[in-house]
Length: 176
View 1 (tube, rainbow, N blue to C red):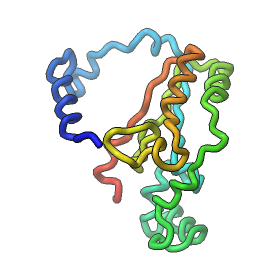
View 2: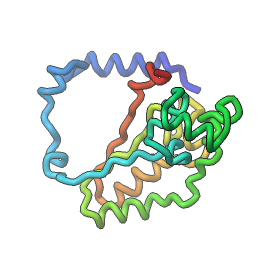
View 3: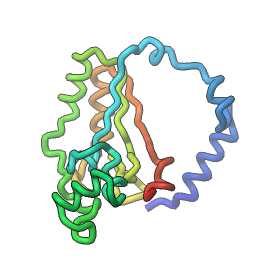
View 4: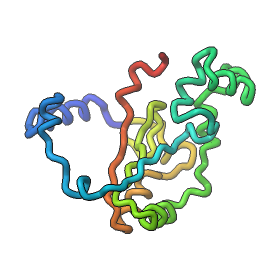
């Protein structure tokens, strides 16, 4: 595993070089790329371990631990007490055995999408790509595939602009 301090140092160095700063004024001065202005239709994909329970939303991994929430009640009724079956226990069930990046890209292209943004990492911290920083990722657990990498390759082949969405900022207050 790589040292996270090195990565954080690199991020700070990139920000320091500019041309933009990490504040709202600088962000609002950043012009939108032409492909985005002309794209008109894009698809954002929320797919990950939280798809296994398929209840509520992609916030299942957080809400299942909040007593009184619909997710908490559903989890206990369906899977049993949290001490016996927690969120981590969904990972081996997230196999992605029917996942086919090429089929997804073809479908999105036929739908008229110009860009696609899958979630690279949601609030649960599970990375949909091979990571040098964490073993908590789809390449090493669950499907044991770099699903994000496969999607990006297929999107490129179909002429779709792709991004990757990270929801890591929510991690720090994840437990409520």
